[in-house]
Structure formats: C-alpha cells, structure tokens
Length: 329
Image (cartoon, rainbow, N blue to C red):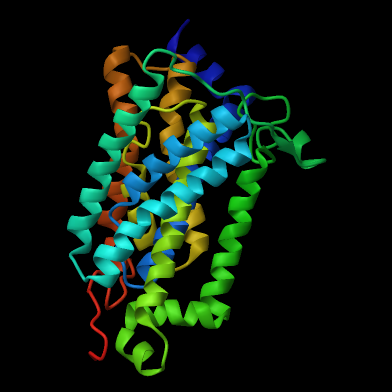
C-alpha cells in the first residue's frame, strides 16, 4: 500500500469515528481529575498527589467491578478510594500545614508502590480483564456520521457510556456552584483571601478540606473510568502522567470548568492519536518503533507548548499552596 493510499484509508469515516471515540475515552479521566483539581486550587490547595489518587481509584474501581460484576460499583469504589487517599492531604497539608508539593509527591509514590504490590499479590497469576461497558446512544444524533458512533466499538460523541454524560453534567454543576452559590464564594475566598473568609466566620480549614476531598473523589472516579471503560484491566503504570496533565489543565482553565472540558478533550485527542496511528498502520515512512515513541510523546509535548503559549495567562489564587494559620491576615 502506498503512503497516499494509507493516508486516505486512515482518514476514512470509520477511522475518524474511531479517533473521536478514542479521544473521548482518553479525555474523560482527565476531565474528572481536572474538575476536582480546579476546585482544590480555587480553595488554595495544590494537589500534586492527583496522580496517586487516580491510580488508587483505578485499582479499587477495577477490583470492585471485577468482583461485583458491576461498573457502577466500580465507579463508586474508585470515588471512595480517591477520597480516602485525599484524607492524607487534608491531614498533613490543610490541618498541619506541611508542604503541599512534598506531601503530594509522597502520596503519588506511595500509591504507585501500594497498588502494584497489592494487585500482584492478588492477581499475579490470573491477570483478569473486564467486559465492555454498555453505551447509551442518543436518539437521532447517534446516526450522524463521524460524531454519531452508533455500532462502532469506541462509539463517538453521541454514543458513549452514561458516565460520560454525567461528567459533562458535573462540569456544568461545578461552574454553577463556583459562580452562583455561597459555597462557591467560600471556596474562592479560601484561595484568594483566607483571612477575610476566617474573619467572616467561615472555617478556612473546613472549606479547604471539603475541596480536597472533592478533588480526591474526582481523581478516583477518573482512575476508575480509565480502568473499567478505557482499558478493561488494571496496570500499575496505566495512569501515565494524566494526573499531572490534569493539574496543568486546572491552572490553564482559569477557574472556568468549560475550559477544563475543552482542554481535557484536546489532550485526550493527542493521547488517542497514538492508538489511532498504530491501528491504521500510518507511520509516514518512519520505523514503527520510532513513530510509536514520537506519538506517545505528543501529549507531553503539547503540555509544554501550551504552557509556553498560555502559561502567563494561567490563574493562580493568591494563597495557593500556602498553609493558613487561624487568626492570620
């Protein structure tokens, strides 16, 4: 097959549908994690441990879905596992005022080691996998070319597991909460002016604690989605830096969940290109191994490019990563 013919086949309608569907599957874990991190950052806590929380959520979600034979049980277990790990951030950083970056790195390293050890102890021989997750096709829209996805293995925009639509609804709810509610005002004040929030009679510690718990729960849910829907199995390397990408997305979103959604799916697209290119056998004349290495670098190269272009516009709360002592101004 000539290069021109390979490119023509790669950009056919089924191939593009698979690419869009793969971008959504890769972007949803980033979306959940970025939404949680956005709330945590607005409250003044930089959750570097997001990677570890996603990994713990992936492990707990996989085990619960495997033993309970229910993806929803897995999603719930992942959410709880991520929230459970985030309690360490609450204790060490919010309550005791320790360095958030150091504690976050320690949490990530601990979760990586713990999940690998526990998983290998339980599944070293069997290495089980999960079945496919049922998809919901939106009537009418699922029949559209490329974006419809009905009948395709990965689906597309309008044919996805129900939890994907819940994620988009969650982004709308977070945007409304931050802009239109007293809770959102308290969260923003905890990050920008914690002293003023304390003077107003609202606990900075409680506000930050709930924000960190929410971030952990969303990271765990994102990890569970990655294991249950994205891969159908668990590996101790499966998160692959997504937690750190989510942190960057939360910063670049400038406190707006809408941009977190856009950024998540753009990075999801860059992650999906690797699988798409391999599936379509499109290497542009390069050796297969070299081309694979290049496309797997794309998400992280994209992070660097975005930071160079838009890093100065990123919004960072005034008290981000700064411990708060009650009574201080």
